[in-house]
Length: 296
Image (cartoon, rainbow, N blue to C red):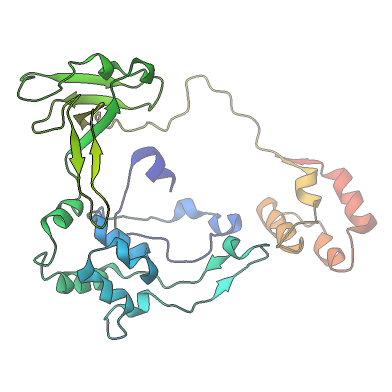
């Protein structure tokens, strides 16, 4: 997880195959385990939606896939149960619980989807565009000085036919915090132009005086983050305070498991586990506490 956030994805196929996160004690000596990842390829947008949507959200995916979520004869119907266990796990509300849903087998999912869309033949041109791994990116913004955008100073037309060599550096310092290179596009709606759009099952939308500009956008190059300590950094001592050892009123763990974990890591015997079962640390625990206030 840390590698993903600091350096990027190490595998597009790997997933954590459990419903619950590990205890800290489970990670002892994990640095001795040699884990190798294969990068693979990312899932396409429709594959991602089919992996997370229940059948009630089928309207958001192409029609050719919807039967895979609802038909009892679907080869992957087991991915979309309508009845499943919910582990409240001490939480107060149902939405805070853990849904014990089956994990998605990507190989089975891709095989079923490929058969359903007949190798993309049943997808419309628009749906095929939506399902690309990547594509052209457009920025839409109002030509207004108050946006704090350097793009607001560009020529009003922003049309590729008129801006042959137009490549601009965009920096939204006050509003959107977006930075990258922009370029003019062909065939876009110009500023001041009347714009009309017909959306399926919706009345026609008409804008008499368009004030929204559109430009092509290119993300800045990704630079790998270096996870290193700064020069001359002074690290604090690794200490565990007495309250961390003797705090026995812990939710979910019943106190006992927490004490055992600390004893194992520090290789000490507090004598608290047995006495905790009978209602408290007692005099023995308090004496031990006085003698072992801090552990390096």
